[in-house]
Image 1 (spheres, rainbow, N blue to C red):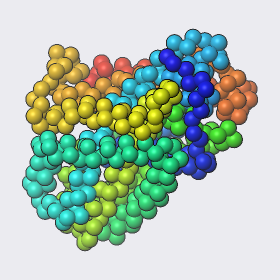
Image 2 (cartoon, one colour; image 1 turned 90 degrees about the vertical axis):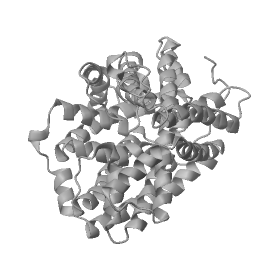
Image 3 (cartoon, rainbow, N blue to C red; image 1 turned 180 degrees about the vertical axis):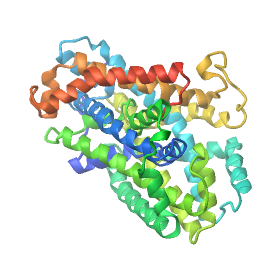
Image 4 (cartoon, rainbow, N blue to C red; image 1 turned 180 degrees about the horizontal axis):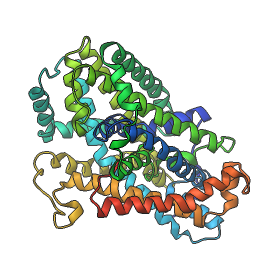
Length: 465
C-alpha cells in the first residue's frame, strides 16, 4: 500500500460543518424508506425499543472507533488503520480492514444509486400530477418503472453523475457546501410532512403503533432485525465515517459529535415514521407492506388526501436529498484514497470511481427486468433465488458490512493502543466512560456481531441494510 506521507487532506471548516456532513451521510434511504417498512413488518413499538438500545449501546461505541482511527490516521481507511496499527506497535497488515471498507462503500454505492434514482423518478411523477388512484395503478407504475431498463439507467446516471460533480469540487467547496444547503432543507421538509400528517392523517394511531411496544410480537428474529437496522442506519462498515473523521480538526470533541450524530440519525428515523404512518393509517392502509411501502402504498395514500400531489413531490424530493448526501459519503473513501496518490487529481478520481460504480450498477438495473430470472449463485443456499441485485444486497447487509464492523471492534479492542484511544476520546484510561467503551468494543460487540452473523447466515434471517 502506498503511503500518504507528504499528502495532507483538507479539513472541515468547522465542527458544525462536520456534524452536518456526518449526519447527512447517516440519514439516507435506510432511515426513511427502509426504516419505515422494517418497522411495519416487525410490529412497531417493540422493534423501535430494541433498535434504540442497539443504536446507543453498539452503534455509538463503533462510531467512536471509526472516529478515533480516522482522526489519528488522517487518511483514507487503509492508510488510517495502517498508521494507527504502526503507532500501536502492530502489523500494518491490518490495513486489509480499511480495504474492506473501501470495497463495501463502492459496491453499496453501485446499487444504492439505482434505488436512489427511483426517488427522482417518483418526484417527477408527483410534480407532474401523475399519482395512482388505485392499488392496481400503483402496482403498474412501480412495476413499469422497474421493468424499463432504459428508464432505470437514465435515473441511475442522473443520480450518480450529480454525486460525482459535487465530489469533484472537493471537501469544503463541494461536500460541505452541499450539506449546508441540503440538510436544513431536509429538516424543514420532514417537519412540514409531519405537520401535514398530523392534520390530514391519523397521528394518534401512528404514535400508538410506533411508541407503544407490544411485547408479544418480540422474538429473536425481531431483535436481530433491530440490531441490523441500528448497525446499518448509522452507516458503519463502509469507510465513510472514518474518512470524514480524518478531516476533523484536533480541537473537536469526538465523544460529543459522535453522540450528536447518533441522536440526530435516530431522530430522523423516528420523525420519518411520523411523516409516513399517519398518512397510511388515515386512509385505512396497513403498515406491513414491505419494501413497496414508500413507492407503492404511500403514493396511493397521498392521492386521496388534500394537497397530496404537492406533498408527494415534497416527500420524494426529501428522499432524493437524503440519498444524495449519503452517496457522497459512500464515494468519498475511495476518492480520498486515490487523491492520496501522486498525480491523481480530485476531479479525475471522482469521475473515475463514480463511473466504475455506474457500470457495476447496470447489473442491478438489469436485475429488475432483463435478468430478473438469472440467479447466478442459486447453488449456494443463502443466495438461492437471488438476482445479482439480491446477491449484492444480501451479501453487503448480512456478511460484508457486519464483518467490517466486527473487524473494527476487534482492531479497536485488541490491537489499538489504549493510550491512543484515550487521547482521541479525551478520557483517562481509568475513567468509567473509557472502561465502558473498551469493554463494549473488546468483548460485547464482537460477541454480538458473531451471533448476528451466525443468525443471518445459518438460520436464514434477513438482516438490515
